[in-house]
Amino acid sequence: MTGPEANILRYVRWLREARGLDFDPTTVDGYDRLWRWSCGDLEAFWQSIWDHFDIVSPTAHRAVLAEDRMPGAVWFPGAQVNFAQHVFGHAHAAHAAGHPAIVFRDEAMQREGRSDEIAWPELRRRVAALAAALESMGVVAGDRVVAFLPNRPEAMVAFLASASIGAVWSICSPDMGPLAVLDRFRQIAPKVLIACDGYVYGGAVHDRSEVLATLCAELQTLTDVVVWRHPQLDVALAAVRPSALDRLLERNDRAAEGDRPLPRRHHGRAAEGRRAPQRRRSERAAR
Image (cartoon, rainbow, N blue to C red; front, side):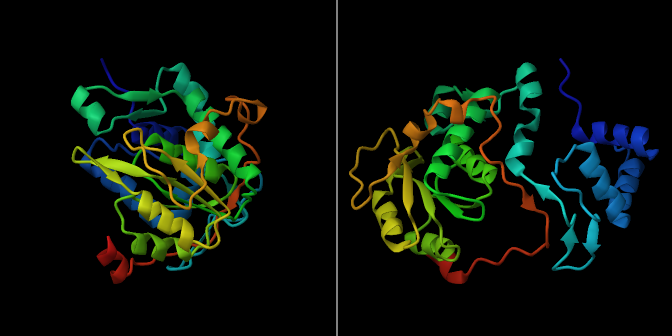
């Protein structure tokens, strides 16, 4: 049984047919020429990526690279792109071909040799449900949604829901200390916190309810808290009156129909390129 064709092979075939450029990435020389072209003709390369992957923008870009400097490069000025829209752009085809959106396995499932799968229509329904819930909390484009979550499908759903309405997303692992998390989140004044009360690592359940209570008390800009409760924990969340993430994801009305466009899909502008700030030493030490 042969696997799906590699993306790079589809791309170079498209380059040959649409641009008249011939590269063979299966050879050392062909791959090297492709790489050199991608670095030497930035505008042609990145325009070809835009066209090949059918990037959608309600407004046309005026140039590919308006300002060629780093830091501060300006890419695709005038364009507006929504990441969640593009993630779901191929959902129907992927689902029809039998490909799941997410295949997930945690420690317990690893020991049992089983995995969970989430189909594309179900992922879209969950994302739309949470996006509608966030909008009902008053989240609008530019607001910050932060997460204190482990690597689980719920984190992916929360990110896509936030992105779909134009919210700024930031996430910290629940094994981080409260000072490190506060150091990161306070800078962006979040409106909503989506968090867990614990996680499993090395076969042990780690209760993070006290850290969660600290985050809620110290993040003064929060208006809402959403919590994913770990099934192996039964702890009271002191001074926290959260919405339950599981209940929000169960929403199945017209605002969360699986085939409905995501609510108020916001398109973020493609603007200046900036280097990510380095993590402060105090944050690294607090982990």
